[in-house]
Amino acid sequence: MDSYGDRSLIRDRRIQYETAGLELPDLDRDPMQQWHAWHAEAFDASVAEPNSMVLSTVDLRGMPDARVVLIRDADQFGFTFFTNYESSKSHQLSARPVAAATFAWLDLHRQVRVRGSVERVSDSESDEYFASRPQASQIGAWASPQSEVLRDRHELMRSFVEHEKRFAGHPVPRPAHWGGWRLVPEEWEFWQGRPSRLHDRFRYRPVDGRWQIDRLSP
Ligand SMILES: Cc1cc2nc3c(=O)[nH]c(=O)nc-3n(C[C@H](O)[C@H](O)[C@H](O)COP(=O)(O)O)c2cc1C
Image 1 (cartoon, rainbow, N blue to C red):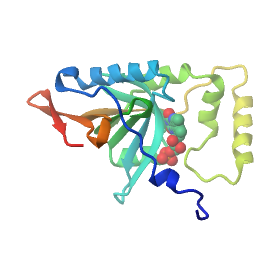
Image 2 (cartoon, protein in one colour):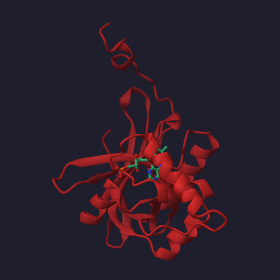
Image 3 (cartoon, rainbow, N blue to C red):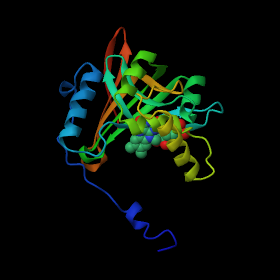
């Protein structure tokens, strides 16, 4: 024991992944269909925040950065999430429009990794999603200069109250600094935990206009 507490909780913790496993014929040829099948199972299993992904970006120095965001759509065009266009992540994505995403559905011993290019969604798409948000979240988008330094929490709350008054009795318009990005997958990996660390991994890559699927060593 040291000042960090009981580190054997980290070093010695091992879970046996007793899952049925994954074979090539089990996989949909379309990775987005496969993702939806696993996402539905994550939902049915009540895993925490099945819509969350770790979004990894790189800054101008080439330094990686990562944070959790919630996806709001997943279709043939990619994964859509919403954020502040003046945030650190958006500055990084504007300068280097590539990203990686990691879905960790740990209760099911599953991980999906995606890499690809990133593009802004249309203003109308952002407007439509913004209009569907609870009013307090809409005001929050106005009130929070995401990723900037605050003097204290009071500064944020004062900004929230000011914007609440400004929009009282009116629909809240989408701020120009808030909207969506879409990660367009170029490479995928589906990982299923198996006993003795002999996990199943399948990578999808585009080859001659279709997705080639390869089993990777765990
Ligand atoms: C469960 C969860 C969901 C989140 N969803 C979002 C989201 O959808 N959009 C967003 O901008 N930040 C979201 N965040 C906050 C981000 O992780 C991050 O703190 C914020 O976007 C600022 O990141 P940046 O400074 O790298 O731009 C979420 C955090 C958690 C833990």
